[in-house]
Length: 300
Image (tube, rainbow, N blue to C red; front, side):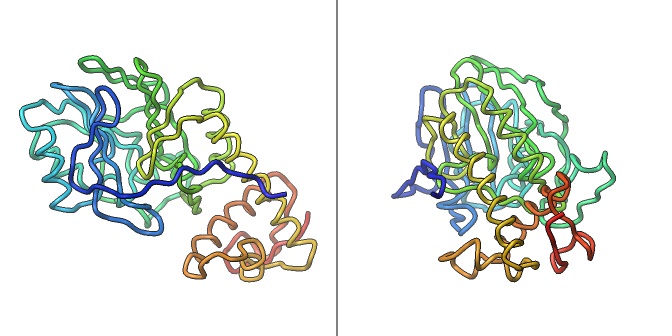
């Protein structure tokens, strides 16, 4: 029986408006809906008076204008990035230019993989370098808010979540979303890291998640546990494909993702590839042609 994920759907998006979503928390939604962003990128403004901005979003003039209008008369002291995909970080540059606020992130795109010799050259905002680099457990603070950085690699190697200590809120970026599971795309995406990061969040006690895409998650432990179970189920589906003689991604994806819009097959293939890499690392799968999207895979 398939794992039931308690998805949270949302309708009637309001673009370009600073919506009060919780005490001391506002959200401005960018008009960049897609199959990967849901209704669009939600930029969060934490605090009042002296504020932090989390995930400024895509480089859209109307979105940047809406952010600046939302913080007019206030001081932006921190611009925080969960990661460096093009729907999250590019608007940091004009926001910084307009407000003078420094940027904070784990590092440039791919920086979480550099230590193990993997150079990531595509798929992200390669122009972004933070003014201040945040490691796991680092803290930034302002008037009435303290945000703890939690390194959660997997979706990207430089992915951070931010825990607002005074409230029990967590900003999980794309690591945990209410409307969909996350894409894990090698080489920067890493399924082993992703599952370990989910387990890391499962051990924490935040009560509400505010993802960058979609509605808040009000039962995060159940949600995260379902995500872990879902990835385990996907791994078993991959092994079942191998047992049935489906040795390539081209053969596996239609079997595993029955009913999926075929336009999303390339993304599904990359996520399945991430699962195969993880199974190979565990010694459960062998890659006689080497690890590649076009290669063959077998039971070890």
